Length: 294
Image (tube, rainbow, N blue to C red; front, side, top):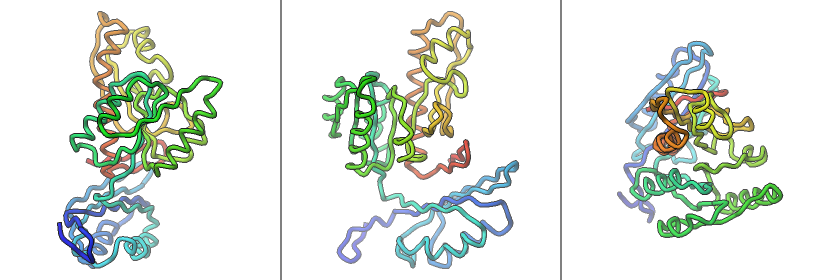
């Protein structure tokens, strides 16, 4: 840490460029030359080319200490490079913690796991609120130092309840919404307010068993594996771009309760991995897919 202009600056902070463009020669060199020309040092770079769509994706992380441009000047200075290669560009900084809201319901395992990981420093975020349509978990959430908002919902009050949710998210200036087994279908208005910024955990290996009661569906079908899927929420139920998945073997001896118990472990792991990838600026969305860098 050091002081500059009376402010405490984290010299270990890095900038992250996330970019996509038509695949072509010279992209990697141009990005590296831009960073070097302004006194930057690349600490990590990763790229991927979609050979079908002919699209190039890259994540470049660079030190901000000693960089000759102020943060607010970087994208404007990079614009000629972006224009030359028809790039879509995002710029993030690792010392700016996204503001996160968790929406939950009666089931607690995903909520508690996220709060535990956040409390231990695994998730680089500020969890600014937990919104629950049941009152069950208020004491534990508040014990963790997170504000708790109880907004009950019924079929008759769903529209008004969601308006209250949206107001709360706006008031808290939320960057990312996590559905920790929230068990409510969001309206297009709420989904459109947070494009690629709402992460849901679905308790099946999508695209199998979309919708309600996937463990019952899996049991009825006699599957030999069950899974969990974390994805961005879109207007199409359980069909948003997939961030992470995991599976576990099961057998004919497993009841629906057994599948549910085994699935909870998968759900917590998959959701946490997806959230962390988003928070660490390792995700690029294109169409119905994602590129998730390591």
